[in-house]
Image (cartoon, rainbow, N blue to C red; front, top):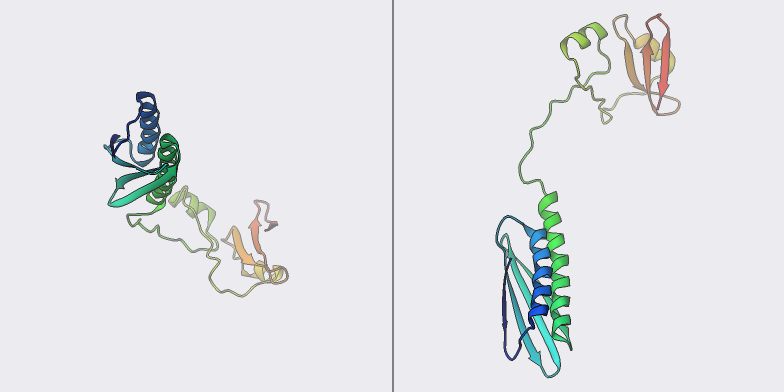
Length: 180
């Protein structure tokens, strides 16, 4: 990170300058470690009040931190704190935004599939249940009648509890009911 100090009647001690460069270096890592970021620090003195204004251009956005204190080093540290908060916020926005359209996965809307065909054709395929589809709830007896000979399971909404239930045919021909 390249830091430019500008000010009248103001000089920083080498130890203070080293601490501030480490502090602004941390902010530079937040923003982007691969490219060189330029920081401009403007120092001014009005009577006994030191003012520091730190500015960074980050992807066409200006991040500005302003601090004031009776001590010059503390004024610069306050400006760096404010700048760090803005840098973290800008970085999270940049990271969390989806900038490219994603390909939509084709949804498979099935309630049941045959076991031999499903395992042979689509091993590892995920079946999604569309909860937004408006279907009437069923009772357990209606679900048993709905299941055909070739179906191994049926997902339905229970009429009494309004919960999702799964009716599964076991290998011995009996049924298991799984309620959510």
